[in-house]
Image (cartoon, rainbow, N blue to C red; front, side):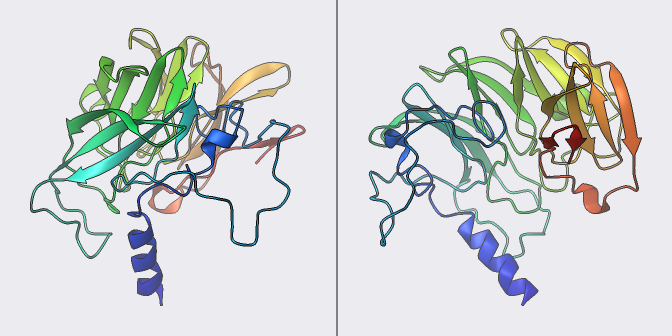
Length: 287
């Protein structure tokens, strides 16, 4: 039974991403990053549909793309998403847990939110050696005419949102001397003012902040054997904005401007490094 469920999840991950995009032209609000404008999963538009038709909402368009697990980011009438293209004559292993090197590339795609037309593609060579190799994991972040992406093998890109050309990039594995996590780099990038905050990994660099305009590193912080898969989040506690980083060994509150660690709550290391869920605030509690 477990094998059947695993196989089903693996197949579904490769379905072209049209269902989630089908009704985007109806929305007034942009959704430019993981969990939306305020990174809290709340849609504040006033035209919320209270009930879908019996046969579901009308499909406005479909666009076939490659495999992947990223969500779409929507901004200024465009949809940004990542996918995976296998190399010629290559297929993914039947066992998604197998870690073998698979030739292929990753792509950043920009679609017209009105009709699904592909406006531009930015692709780069990216052999995979991760479990569940269907495609990239992290949702793009769009801000100030730029789109920021993190690929499954640690390719961090800043692209022109209008044309798709690269403005700056980092290879997180090379720059920080780290290896790819078992299930790939999956922490959704966070934009905070003039900074882009990402999960990297290794000694002193679990969390890293970059100047979002130039790509220059501004600070790095925290050490752990694995970075985990939980996205960085910012919440306010005690009158201070705090960057919450949950990695497999501890939960941490940092100054988002400097990377200074305010507090650390250590816990028993999480099995397989699987810190995943986004930290959420309720009143003065952190979940």
